[in-house]
Every structure is written in structure tokens, then in C-alpha cells.
Amino acid sequence: MRTLLTGGTVVSMDPAVGDLDRGDVLIEDGVIVEIAERIDVPGAEVIDATDRIVLPGFVDTHRHTWQTAFRGVGADWTFAEYLAAVHGTLKPHYRPEDVYLGNLLGRLEALHSGVTTMLDWFHCGQSPAHADAAVAALRDAPGRSIFCYGAGFRTTDPIDAEIRRVRSTLSADGLLTMALGLRGPEMTTMDTVGDDLSLAAELGLRTSVHIESGSAGGRPIAELLDNGLLFDTTTFVHANGISDEQLRMLADAGSSVSISPDVELKMGIGWPETGRMLAAGLRPTLSTDDCPSAGGDMFATMRTAYVVQRGIDGGLRSRDVLEFATIDGARACGLAARTGSITPGKDADLILLRADDLTVFPANNPAGTIVAAGHPGLVDTVLVAGCVVKRDGVLVNVDLPALKARLIESRDRIAAAAGVPLDGTWRPRPASE
Image (cartoon, rainbow, N blue to C red):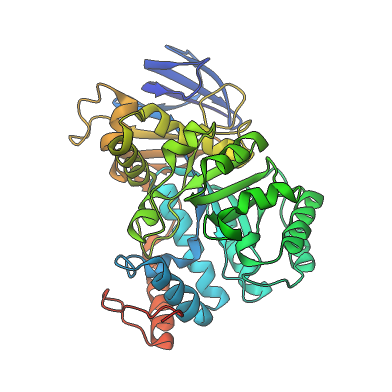
């Protein structure tokens, strides 16, 4: 089980390995074992990486994948309209099979665009069957996925039994693992937050929580710290408007952050806090959030984060942004020992990008080119744990026409049941109105 990638431009994201203008990568049993200018291994399967940039796969640290069928419908929505539409109007009509199709097609889309590791922040769990369908879809997609089970909103209901049930079906170290989506101080009591964190610790689960400055009198992080509930196993999503003092609290605790720059900007959530997070000692990670409102690829996400912060202070470097999308994301998911860089001993989660495509040719500065001009059309080959899941621009062993037809049927049924159009003319009315 040896695979040799030959002749590519290697952007390793590992300072000890560095970058190679022309390099080979040797994989044995799904693990990277050597990176060098030239490697001679008779009998290995050879993947010609000539005119390709070899890069660790992207890591998306926060995506609501179940919403895939309604891509683009909410391009003009505010955040309040999104909540009213997706959670108030569409979600009640989702059946388990709808969740399965949304999660499967969404995960395949992420793989297609080079996202080898993805945290699926699931909040469509109207029943155990809905959660099981989401898990089944992630299992059927050949990526490295984290099922982050968000078990409730604005409730104090106990979640122990359901979280334990799902946790018992998933391994701790396979391609599909689990995390807990916290309700957090915005959604429930501090006692409930503490109970949820204790459950996560008992089950060995990392946690993720949506947070912003409007909760807890504008000091949600400080309140968590005061209650002994700030840990290095929690990723804080968005964090728009959080004070510098509280950002430093996150850094001191070893917590991680996930920004979704496209959604945060266009929905009016707030300016992405990339620069302020860096100044506080945090390494931001990147996420696409939701596809009814924004694109699902990491190239667009990187570029928005990059140009916005450059416009604010001119200080952000393209290499930093590429780190956000790879090794920093892996750290936030607790997977830095397994993925996020091209390093001997790590799993071979790799992507090959076309450097001969006219949109990026000549790729004189590979890292800068990826951030400034990259797009999903460049993704030629994708490997997850050494297994080729996309080759020559096509996903392997996936019947996309059949799956697309099923997703359209699902979308049409939900839209008809909810009584909503799909042409972008629907402006849902927020509950506050």
C-alpha cells in the first residue's frame, strides 16, 4: 500500500519540512512517510503531480451541512431572516431522509472543493432518527468528518441520554468522530452550560459554541471564565464584537475560534475579528457556515477573510490565511497530530491543485496565489488518509446524477410543505417583527 506523488510543488504548512518547488511525497498505508525533492520507490502507485500544487487538505471548522438543498435561497437575507426562514419555516418540514441527502451532498461538495476535514455543526435534530440520518450521511461520504451534535436551542432540557446514544455509535479516532455543540450562555442557563461541558468531558468530546457580544451583558466569555467553564477543548464560533479583554481570556485558556467571514459580513452579524484575534494571541480558523447564504468552498472564505483584514490594517499575510484553513483548523478540531500539514507520520489528507490553469498561471508564489486567486475548479485530486476520493477533477465512486435528483425531490417537497418560493424573492419575517 504505497503511493508516490511525484513532481509537484509542495506547500507543506510544516516549518520543519518547508516548501519544495519540485518535490515527491511518499505514502504508506495511508500515512505520509517521506517528503523530498526526489524519492525512488519501485512498485508504488504513482500519481503524477506535475503542474500541481500539493497542499494539505482544507479544514472547515463549522458548517451547517443539512441545509444544502436550499443553496442560494438566502443570498440576500439578514441573520434574523435566516433564523426565521431556516429554523422557523423550513426545518419543521425536514424528515430524516432530507437530512441525509443534505448532509451527504454537502459533504461531497466540501470534498470536491478540497475540504478533507469538516466539522458538521448539526442543529436539525428533531428526533433521534434525524441525528442518525446525519451521521449515516457523513459515514457514507469518504471524508474526515466531525459530527458536532447541537442538541437544543434556548432550553434547559437534559440531553445526556441522546448524546450518550450517538456517542456509543462513533469511534474516538476514526474518520468520523463526534463533538458536542453547546447551547452556550446565549441559549440557556449557566448551570446547563456546566452540565453540558461536564458531559462532553466525560465522553471525551470537544465542544463548539456560537457566541457574540450581545449575550450576558456583552461579557459571555468573562461569565464562562468566572464560572470555571472556559476550556482549551472549546471552539468559539463568530465571536463578533467580543472585547479585546475577553479575546485574551480565550487565548489564555487555549480555546480556539472559528470565523465565517462571508456570512458574518453579508448577514450583518459583524466584521470578522481576524486581526483583533491575532493581536490577542489567537489563531483564527475558517468556516463556511451555511450555503443558503454563502458559498461552501474554502477558497472564497480565505479570500474574504484576507481582503477584509487587509483593508482594515494591511497587516495580514496570505500565508497566515492558508494556515487558518489547514493546520490551525486541525488544531481547533483536536486533529493536529493527524492532519493539517504534510508531515511524516500524519495521515495523507492531501489535495492537488492545478497550477497550469490559466486563472493562476504562472503560480509564482503558490501560497499567495491560492489565497488571492484560488477556486474549486483547481482541485484536481483529493486524498483522505491516503485514499484517492477525487481523481482528475471527478469524485470517485459517487453516482452524482442520482444523488442530485434525490436532493431536488427533497428540496421541492420541503419548499411545497413550507409554502416558500426558491427564486430569492422570499423575505421571511423575523419573529421580532
